[in-house]
Image 1 (cartoon, each protein chain N blue to C red):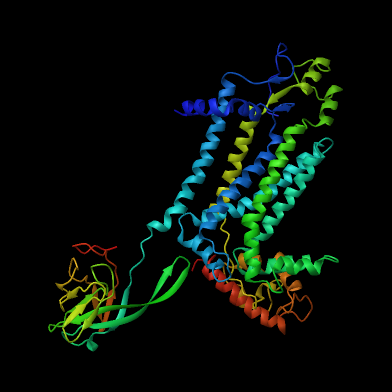
Image 2 (image 1 turned 60 degrees about the horizontal axis):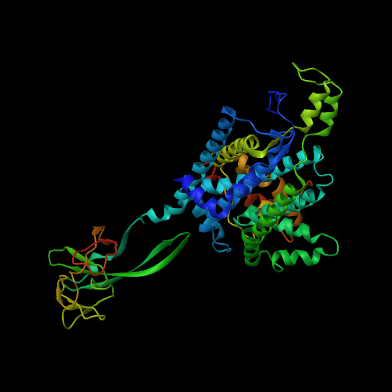
Amino acid sequence: MASKLYTWLDSRLKLKSVERTLLDEPIPGGASWIYVFGSATLFLFLLQAVTGMFLAIYYAPTPDHAYDSIQFIETQIMFGAFVRGLHHWGASGMVVVIGLHMLQVFLYGAYKSPRELMWMVGVVLFLIVLSFAFTGYLLPWDQNAYWATQVGINMVGTVPVVGDLLAPVLRGGEMLGALTLSRFFAVHVLFLPALLATLVMIHLFILRRVGPAGPWRGGYERRKSGETASQGREPGSPGFVERRVRRSETFYPRQVFMDAVVMLGIFAVVAVLALTVHFPLADKANPSDAVLAVAGPEPGAPSVRTPGCVGHRRSISSGRVRAAGDFAPGSLCRASRGPGRGEGSGGVCAVRLHRLSSHSCRRRRCGA
Amino acid sequence: MMHSEPPPDDVPSGLHTPVGSRRSFFQWMTSAAAVCIGLGLSIPLVGYLVSPAFKRRAQPWVDVGAVEDLPVNEPKQLDYVTSIRDGWMETKAQKAVWAIKRPDGGVTVFSPICTHLGCGYRWEQGDHAFKCPCHGSVYDREGKVIAGPAPRKLDTLPWKVENGRLLVMYKEFKAGLPVSQEV
């Protein structure tokens, strides 16, 4: 049945030659596990695209409803937390895999002539992925999202000359709000995917024009001098080295097999993370509540140390979130590191931090 | 590199593809990986997509007033405000039911919707009848059809009395059928 359909299509569309072109791409030096990162990135992009489309079914990009709609996905929709978890961990995984991909290309010198264009397009792709990460982070519209975006946009605002123009353009005005959320949503789900898909095609087009770079040349030269010649072969045999370098195999089946195995492994890791490591929402974004800007646990707030909530408290009061205080103009609690900490405005913070963390803990981590 | 066997000497340099059982192993593994990922994704995604369609809305008992306030043998419209969950939104809606207390102390609660085509009806005090303004269906105080196109008597709702308060479970019924059928 399937083969009949294939024959029917092939007789009209001449698929055989397309198949040949796609699968019989020569891989210089043969297939290798080190070449999987490009395919792995592509796989994660597709995973993000699919899970993102499904998340968009229930997501509402307005400050009134964004947070509630994510809560709805998390609690009311079958597999909702899983799909959101896949998207969340897939996003982080994509940045990691891109890092490995770039590292491999860099170490193998695969960016060198004639492949500079592929590298340049790749760098632009990387920046697009980071833009995805930035715009996507705001969409849940919780306190973390709100203040992290506040920080990010204010950082853009510090860029010399153009910063004062760029920040309000990113924000859609003076204030981070409805306009910011809707434009971040549109950029995240419409503009960037279109751009990324186009550039991925260009990236792959260039790859097919210039061909893969092949093995690390340094390794080849060492082998040539006989230092690491394999056991059971005549060391230093000139024919051996020549063949090794000139040997080439097609993309299919071995490289496809390796790519597929790695994709499955990545999917398994992302799925296990999505199932086991819950990514909770913080409280709903509240522009007038700069609670997250507190630096570290406040000494004057003993009730913060709710049993079982320590990890959560640490997560909301450290690192990225603390920075919000440094940037948020007029925030109630700038990160105070002086001796007066825990008093004055810090006291206000302590109280509010307590409210936030115990509230969050009650609802999520401690499950009471 | 996984490739361990040296290429035989008679294989010319250049393109070379593995043949035989190794090749079929790679094919099999590739297909297996694709099937695993496909199932691992499609099953949750289909569940995700269809799950709201199978969600039954919980029908709570709603307090519509004190039983004492109901006149005997005289239908009374009881208004109440209920909250409706619409996805992630919760909205308030005003609803009404018709209740009539019988002399023996029992209560009949009617759905406020005409069984013909879903209009709201009202009680005509002078005629001692429920009348639907849309197509002229008329019901007596027991809910039986006296006149008009209505295919069945008025639908009744489950009720109970707790601490002197009348509680009603609101339901909706399909219009136009000869028998009462819940939506």
